[in-house]
Image (tube, rainbow, N blue to C red):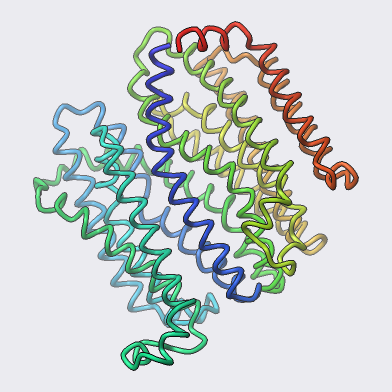
Amino acid sequence: MSLYKKLLNQTAIYGIATVLPRMLSFLLVRLYVDYMPAEEYGEVSVIFSYLIFFNVVLSYGMETAFFRFYNTEENKQKVISTSTISLLISTVVFLILGFIFRQNIAQWSEIKEDYIFYTLLILALDALVIIPFSKLRAEGRPIKYAAIKIANVAINLVLNVFFIVLLPKWQEEISFLRSIYVADFQIGYIFISNLIASLFTLVVLLPNYFKLHWKFDTLLWKRMIHYGFPILIAGIAFAINEHFDKILLKWMHVPLSDIGAYSACYKIGMFMVLFRTAYTLGIEPFFFSHAKNENAPQTYAEITKYFVIFGSFISLGVIVFADVLKLLLVPKSEYWMAMNIVPLIVIANFFLGIYTNLSVWYKLIDKTKIGAYISIVGAIVTLLLNIILIPLIGFVGSAIATILAYGTMMFISYKLGQKKYPIPYDKSKIVMYLGLSIILSALSFYIEILRETYIFGIIAILFYAYFVYKKEQILVNKILKRK
C-alpha cells in the first residue's frame, strides 16, 4: 500500500495546486456572467480557445520530453538547459512573427487587433515558464509549484474584479483612475489582467534563467524533439477536442450569445476536470519512476480501477447537483439554455481521464507517436461530428462530438495497449462501475420528475457508494485497519 499512499499524497499536493486555481477561475466565470452579456462572454470564450490551442503549439511536447529525459539522463542540467534554450528561441521567433502579422491575424480571425496583441504576449510569457514549472515537479517541490500557480490565478482574479467591477465606479471619484479607465473595454481588461498575472509568474521563476547552464546539446535536443513531436500532435488533437468547438461554432455562424451560454454551462462540467487534471499531474511522474518495477503492470491496473471508482462517484455527484451548481456558477437564466450539455461534458472528461490511464503503455515503451495517432482519430471524430451536427442541433452537437471523440480514443488505446503492453485490468468491475454511474446519472438528469426532487439523485449516490463498498469490501477494510 506504500505505493498507493505515495501516489495519493503526490496527487493531493498537486491537486491543491490545480483545484484552488480552478476554483478561483470559477469565480471569474461567475464574474463574467454577472457583468457581461452572453454575447461578450461568447467572444471571450472563442479567444481563450485560440489561446489554449497555441499554448500547445508553443510547448511542442517539450514538457513531457523534459520529464522523460530528466529521469533517464545522468546529466540533468544538460536536459534543463537544452529544453529551456529551445523554448526561449522558439518563443522569441513566434513573438516577432506575431507582431509583424498581427493585422492579418486580426482580419482572418475577426478578432480586434488589441486583443491579438495581448494574446501574443500572454502566450509568450506562459511558454517561458514551462520548463521552470516542470523542473519544480521533477525535483519534488510541489508546495512552491502550488503557491505560484495559486498566486497567478489570485492576481488575475483580483485584477479582473478591479477592472470590471471597481474601476468603473471609482474612476468617477478618483481622477487618477479616470486616466486608465476605458468605457466598454471589459474584454480588453480581461486580457490585461491575464497578461499581468503571467508576467508575475515569469518574474518569480526568472531565477531559473539566471542559474541556467547556457549549454545547448544538439543531439539531446534532436532526441527530445523526436520524443516530443508526437506529443505535440497529440496536444493539438486534444486542443481540438477540448476547445476547438467554440471556434467551430463561431465559424459556422452560431450566435455569440449561444456560444456564451454553451461555454458557461460547459464550465459546470469542469468539476470533473479538477479531479482529472490533479490526477494527471501526480500520475505522470509516478508512471515513469515505477516503470522498471516488476509488478508495474499490476500496479497500473489497480490504479486505473480506483480512478474509475472515484471518478464515477464524482461525475454522478456533479450531474445530480448540476442545477445547484448552476445557481452558484451561472446564476443568469439567459445562460441556462445550454444546461442539457452538462452530463455529456462531465462524462466526456471522465472518459478522457480513463484514456490518460490507458495511455501509459505507449509512453513507457517510447511509442508516443501511437498516442498522436489515437489523438488524431479523436480530433477527426470531433471535427466531422461538429461539422455534421452543429447545423442540425447547434452546440448540443459539439457536446455529443466531445463525448464520442473521447470514448473512441479510450477504446482504441485499450485495444492497442493490450497488444503492445498487456496490463491486467479488472475489465468486468471497471465496466460495471462506469456503466452504473452513467445510467444513474442519465436517469437523475434527463427524466424531469426525478431531476426536480433530488430524492432519486441522492438515493443513486448512496446506492452507488454502497455498491462499490460491497464489491471492494476487503480493500476498504484493509485501508480502515491501517488508519
